[in-house]
Length: 297
Image (tube, one colour):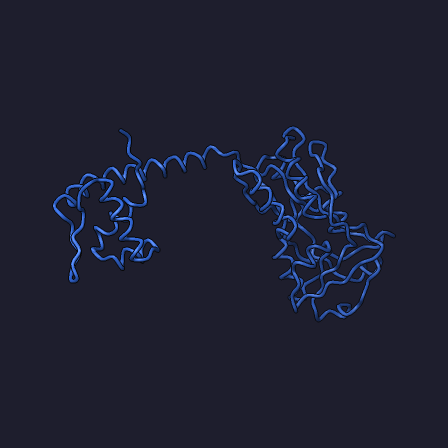
């Protein structure tokens, strides 16, 4: 004859055997005292013997209860270990999808990652920051499976799965800069503003858009300093050591009183894109692109 084992009853008895107090047992298990009593009675009825003696002054185990406890503890520990080991192995066997980002995980991207993880519980989704000045190396080298990066991308071995957030470029200036109060700047005015260049790991075509050395008419744009990360560059901007071109999403996400953001006309627009290695194209990445597209709608 088979008997049903109720793990909650066993857990309640084990805690009660430690505390010898119904109130404290209930607190540890987030149960009422009456529920603790109910679980104990159910276990005693299932076994057919008293396990605990309770008086107005004390709680103690019966001789049968003490023997049962001695047998139960190692068996219960083994059961818990089996479950924990199975959970660890399940986590380790999950397929991992690593999504890279530059500077910040913008709200639609974060929402898409949450939805994608929820709809694909067999996957483990990791979020990995990649350098602002080196948008493609992590994707090409396999450090991430896909990345949300500043466009353009002209790499033959990368696929642009989605383009979004097309906006005019914005100039980040110290709030004390003479041009900080302007509603808009023209591209040729950059010739009179020192830009903080990004480190030169990025392709030259990418740097010409985001860290240009000349205006559209060929006038030289002065350069000062160097930055590898967004926060490093914004710190230099805030301290008045130069200015920096950023995308609209970055400007919106990094609002702060010591930095002003002024749109720049006559420059290539900024855009974000989801890219991945063409030889690693698969349903997982196109599925995430679909989820991200829906989050942006």
